[in-house]
Image (cartoon, rainbow, N blue to C red; front, side, top):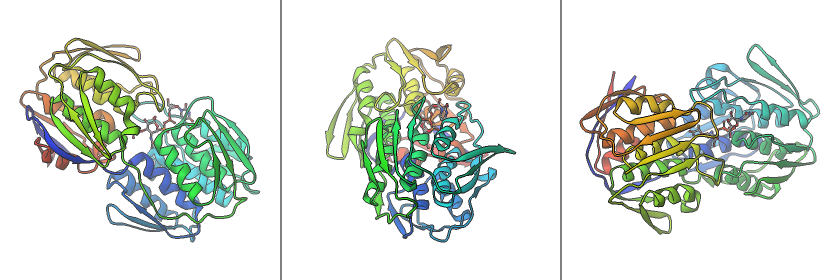
Length: 420
Ligand code: EPZ
């Protein structure tokens, strides 16, 4: 296993180029199962989850090539409809093949993803919605066994909770279903919007894109022709680099971003005393002399994203005062707290609230990555810490960040990747 060695205290400057969004790429890779043509995808991030998803598609029988940025995928000859545990346990987003496989083939077996570090993360809402569309679903030896021999039929789906991949699964199922589907309480994340936009370019009639209410006219089982598309910029990666610059009170420029997708993040940075300048798809962060304490409550888009909560917690350790972060989406997304405390952070937990005392001198230490975004928070803390930090189990990072240490070293950090 690899670990990252980081020497703290180095200010950052210069340009960083943001990659394509992992969380946009995964549903769109799954959507290739709805098509009869070869699909060309550009701006894919070269991260482990994308490579895992492409190997899942190949296991199902798809023909796929991926050069680290571009992919060509054809699923016309897919026969296999079983997504095995060994793949799903590595990447819970594999659940995204459930809707397309069921809609196209009328049957599939997908391993239950199981829990993960940040919470139980059930998929009950995905299953209830598919049953509403006529699927017969049973759980057998850890697998979701789904049947819809006559195909799925359009239905009104009213999600009890906003679920990103749940919404994406049902959008893809509805695209091939017989008749019209209405999705209420749908997720509105930019990644969900891009899935809808790509499907509408393929001829699927979708009303309400970008809102919590979607109306989708199914193709009655007809496979789609999906034109080439480019993955949108990763707003979570952008938020991570903004926090890296902020914790080092440095001025950097982010390129290839969409500043409309990170408004909640920018508002919080302004509350913390930072400012920024937008110039097309670039954004320059203007450092603040004093970091103000912040109050954050995570929420579904367009609220403050849970995927940047850990990174802001690292930043909050440097604020002049006490910050409060409330995590409302996942029941266990404070795994980074213990590791930050080992670096000297003063953080108290009160249920799903973290109280972070600021003006803390972080000290380098050996720390353990636990989940994707918690790991990035440890990197940010290590950039600021006095001395050297070693972050272990960084396979978590490699799932969602492309060339992280290379991009940070280009900005002036001092990071090395080594083998344990
Ligand atoms: C997506 O996960 C993202 N992953 C997550 O990003 C992100 O943290 C999350 O949305 C919230 O924004 C991808 O897009 C691949 P949810 P998802 O279903 O879809 C509960 C990262 O770091 N729920 O919106 O799995 C669930 O337990 C990852 O890139 C049910 O109860 O999240 C959670 O509390 C981490 N039943 C809440 O809803 C269900 O059937 C939101 O989960 C589904 C969800």
